[in-house]
Length: 220
View 1: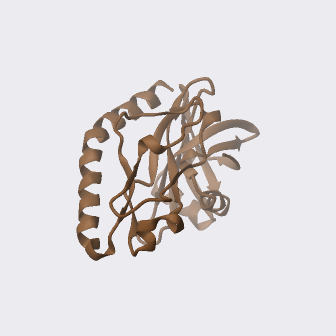
View 2: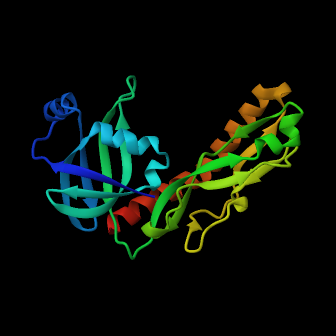
């Protein structure tokens, strides 16, 4: 998915300058990577909000224009106010269109209405809402769709159920759980088990994924 943003370059920095921008309906941001100098920019808050609302923000290629110069970037970190939820700052990454990059793609679960487990009173327990993949920017999927249709209580869907487009590969060989159909009679226990499963699986992959992401960004 691709969206377009018109940005303005900026030279002021610091908390005071950022506060003044936000008072004008603008969000400070930076563009970095591809072995080029960091570019400080400001973004129209409303335009950014509309793109975020479309979903899959971190897998969206942004066509940006700064002072008449166009380039493509990927959102890397959108900081928000911890209480108000308003946007504070956006980091964007330049990329080489011929090189594969790491990106997190959202997972959409469907088929709940066709699940016998749900029909009998169970619920779908979501364990993971996104998956990290490696691919060219032109191949980034907007989302992955997995189905729980036909699932009974106790059944789970895993990473291996994801249909990967050509040129897209997972960054882990672990077959992590995406979601399970659980009984509502033991929701508290199921929630605890799901949280423990997420923590256990995450610990095994977090250090490796973080190091790999940092290393790849530094080579851009």
